[in-house]
Length: 424
Ligand SMILES: Cc1cc2nc3c(=O)[nH]c(=O)nc-3n(C[C@H](O)[C@H](O)[C@H](O)COP(=O)(O)OP(=O)(O)OC[C@H]3O[C@@H](n4cnc5c(N)ncnc54)[C@H](O)[C@@H]3O)c2cc1C
Image 1 (cartoon, helix red, strand yellow):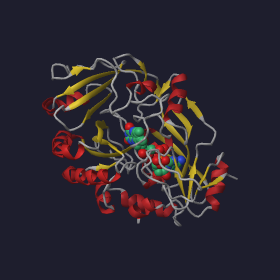
Image 2: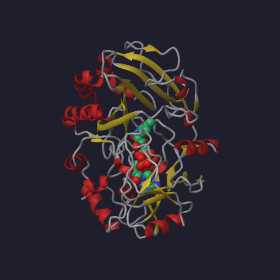
Image 3: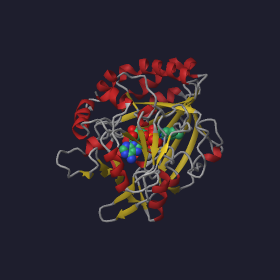
Image 4: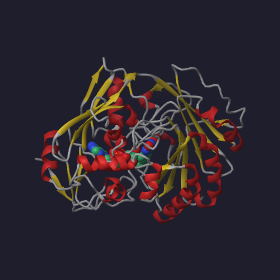
């Protein structure tokens, strides 16, 4: 039997811009308890580490967190696969792997995000050869609407692994995730400042392909890319693009991409360190800012990057009062039906705004108008103004996914308002 905590006190997402309407929060402590809970609860929604910025993890029924399930980190060195408990956060998984000489190919910028939540929304890092974290999924243990525990992997008959990678919480409660791993590697992060727009436009592909993971930060003002983070994998050839020759200057100390203390960012200055301590932008040991922010992000075909950035510069006056930082990353094509980078090499344009919900909503509408010609796909875990119709255009497999969700969950046990809007 799991503990169900009545929602007598106000609970919010991490950013505080969504107040959950859920009637309660269950915190089962075993997979059997998850099964029992699912069997006897008409409607419930999985909750990860609460890092989404929209209502995707909310419900007017019961939320269920897997944070109290025992941690699991089983490495199969022959298969090069790790099995982890779904509620474990990136930093727990990364530290456990690194301690045993193993690595994931990539991580999100924040190490505090849950594994299942990141996978469920297509969360990604950066790198022209790095797809989303969901693409690293080899198999998923899931509690279905029936309460049955199933395992989905590449051998599952209907080929549904690609439907399950990014599942928005709609196909069941994921209790364990198997992820592809590789031997540990070292990464060195170097930061340059103020790469002019002309250089961004002329050399975008060369800059973002110059290292394992590259991020450009901008405010869309005249400074161009005010920070360029180059994360070089030390077992690969050294970067060759001379950012100084292109007009940038080396940072003379650690920098934060937003407005917070640089002490909270992972080590820069070209000092090599383990992947687990360099691929996230933020240190796991620091509380990552106050959370008083709202994020939006769009993934576009990679070839549209320069044109889209130029078009967005027209919105700089809209952004100026509310934008903390925008980040431009690249994401390799995923096979997952609903990954924002599904079947296309992508560029992600991300916005961290101040937590002014009305101003952000207005800005997001303007952004989506500007990005409409580029077939932009909104990130599932961030704010967006896109209609259900627009999401079906952006995600061509969304109708197939809706049909699968109806098959696997005919009574809508895992259906919340977010899903009802897009899957009906
Ligand atoms: C500071 C910050 C930095 C971020 N950086 C990045 C980044 O670098 N790249 C990026 O792409 N995104 C980033 N994000 C967005 C974030 O990764 C996503 O919103 C992600 O979904 C958050 O995971 P979560 O565990 O908090 O999930 P929640 O917000 O709690 O839930 C999200 C979805 O996952 C589902 N879910 C959660 N657990 C389970 C489970 N066990 N079984 C089934 N479904 C489940 C929920 O039902 C819901 O549909 C960032 C967010 C923040 C706040």
